[in-house]
Image 1 (tube, one colour):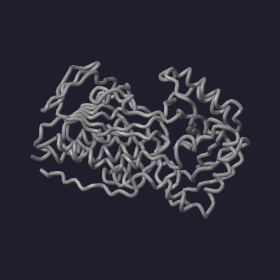
Image 2 (image 1 turned 60 degrees about the horizontal axis):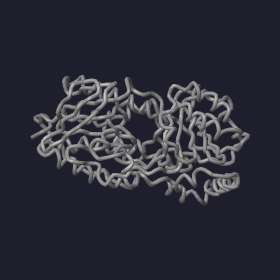
Image 3 (image 1 turned 30 degrees about the vertical axis):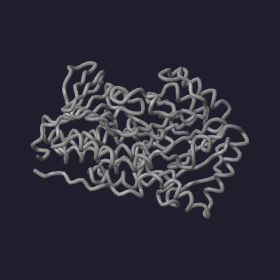
Image 4 (image 1 turned 135 degrees about the horizontal axis):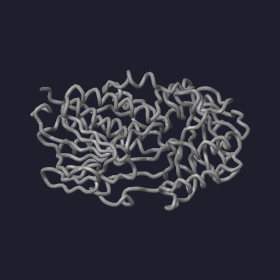
Length: 413
């Protein structure tokens, strides 16, 4: 049976990069797919993500590079600054062959999602009836048996699907419904991440991601595609507080306290925060699943595995997983549960490498005291020296670069 003959219908929960990439592969293989996304519209903005190694190869195989190229962030590298904005160290992208903290190909998360959505719309227009894309809806319950999955939704009628894929992020509702409570699979890493769009300060070096450490926080300003705007990026080293979840006022108050008297561009960052329409704030967690598959339900992207934004590998792993899962479903039309099992094996090495944090955890990335901040500055100077470049290159080349994509033979009609 070829993909053209199958009547399999796949449900994807989540309309972010992982969900859209999977839907694109399925539609191209003429596999019917429904995508439900809780948000009422595509989410713009988001932090920059990089494509390197296997993730770049996936983007090329999926034909995404023509859409990515005009939206690439042309970054020179990472610049470390003191409280007066004086640069005391630079990690130039070219000096590390695009394998340092800044990769050769960087694109804003929202822009990559838009590239995928455009490609998906074109593919769906070519073969009408294969794609049902619903914003403002979500799964509320699911029950599976040997032959399929019965699903109920918040705003639309219940339906039955051959496979359900949870691509709905770190706090995945699909994972909770099919695998168990979130707490069973997540580990708090000792802090929070936040980012949002802000006006670009006048004296920021064009193309450089400027960063500063202060006790309890690391914060920076990263270039956007549009020169007039930039992204404020913050990592906070603080104990978890359940009251912070979903409470923007509390989140902003914490950030203001952590960046009080931080110097440099902290006042501009705090001024922009209150009116930012793309404000993101979440705890840093690691997601560990024994397997991303349970019967006819599979997890993808951060729902399946996550090392937190500190790894810089979340989007890469999601894109690789979406490609491999789409190919396995298309190739395994006669035995869909087996196709999901093969996907779990395919993605395993990428998942484990993608959860490793370059340079260690938050305790190494964010100083707790003034003494530690001074030590971080001194250590940064050593790590950016010419002699240490091979070590730093190896430290950041720890994601998907060393793994070849498995070959998946998709039947041709």
